[in-house]
Image (tube, rainbow, N blue to C red; front, top):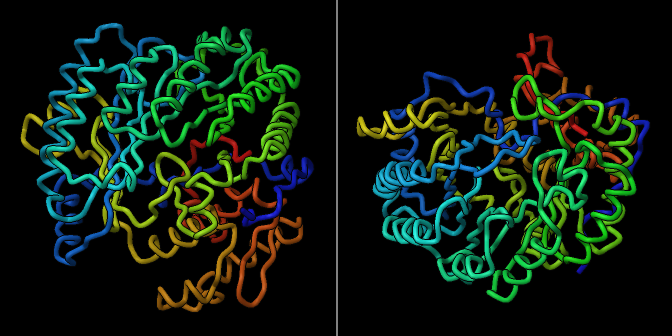
Amino acid sequence: MNTPFPPVEFDARVIGKLSQSGPRYTSYPTADRFQNDFGYGQFLEAVASLRMRRSRRPLSLYIHIPFCDTICYYCGCNKIVTKDHSKAATYLGYLKQEIDMQGRLFDGMGQIEQLHFGGGTPTYLSDKQMGDLMTHLHANFDFASDAQGEYSIEIDPRTVSVERVRSLRAQGFNRISLGVQDFDPDVQKAVNRIQPEAETRAVMDAAREAGFRSISIDLIYGLPKQTMASMAQTLEKVVAANPDRIALYNYAHLPHIFKPQRRIAEADLPTPAVKLELLAMCIKRLCDAGYIYIGMDHFAKPEDELAIAQRQGRLQRNFQGYSTRAEAELISCGVSAISAVGATYSQNEKTLDAYYEKLESGVLPVTRGIKLDNDDLLRRIVIQKLMCNFELSMSSIEQGFPIKFRQYFAVELDKLAAFADDGLLTIDDEWISVTPKGRLLIRNICMVFDRYLGLAHDIAPQPMRYSKTI
């Protein structure tokens, strides 16, 4: 199969010049723009609007399990670290109540074609609890067949036996994602995540034997104690393990936001120059091994559904990163989970007490969100196209919106001229096309179209709390 894009090019000079804080665009507007006056009522209006239009779009379901047994120092996720597993039993009672409510709201409106369990550590739940929860989900929603649907779960290989892997497959999961981060023992010790390679490989082998369709591995570059030599060894082990997808994340050291990161000694972190070298090496090694660079932090084998979706123009960005099923409505259940329904985003309460209190009062635990106006919807499509396809047809946007692209985005196009001068993109009468050199800086390019940042207009930008774009 041919790849849709030439290999990515790495230009350290341009990357160094343009590296800055910026959104990952798992949504637009980004979650920090959500408003506190958006609540349960606004969410109900969004669902009612879909029902009035007799929408039968596919549905995507996200389930958030916030618990972990131990803390990984690098982690920036919304999680609860506890050895008291009775808290999970309490949580499941409320989670099932939310699932009941969502199931009634979306009854008859479409099949679930995509399911993702994230966290925290979803496998914090016992095998029995997981089976019971999956049965509850199937009682409340109509699921597509195993062959048609993508049903994935994030697991911690340290907490999962070979038997548990087989059980997860029997419970209906057909895709599995493993947190690895780094195989080097010194790095693992520095981030409080001791995970022997043999343990990870045993789980991957068990997943293949159990019939999982796709195995994904998460890696992080920029961790404490990481060196070019240690990362090269980790990459060799990853390539030998032969996962279908690889997510390679940039470690964002934000100890003022994420308290566990205060246990990482800044002196142990690679310098910015070494981080760039680590990234360049990772991209080259994985592409040499036959993986397709999907974009930003995702790699996939050419025959994987993620790569196929990109070739067919079906790729999207959502809160799990790059994903298929771009047309699906996203229903999310659990503490802090974010739904994308119609022209709205809505986020659940972020603490257990607040989450439980809303459900006890008989309402969905929505705490904030946003209803997108026409400008938001327009810019969301522009950013999605660039993030996923690395090119944008201006006339295709004009067909969907009553605008003249060059007039509406005149200021943005002027701003993009500087990126064109650096060889990151080209602009002609019809297309904005990101070059192989520009693909690594796609976040910077998309930020030009972000009205809330004010980069292309003379408006006061709102404060940002984002990771570095590269």
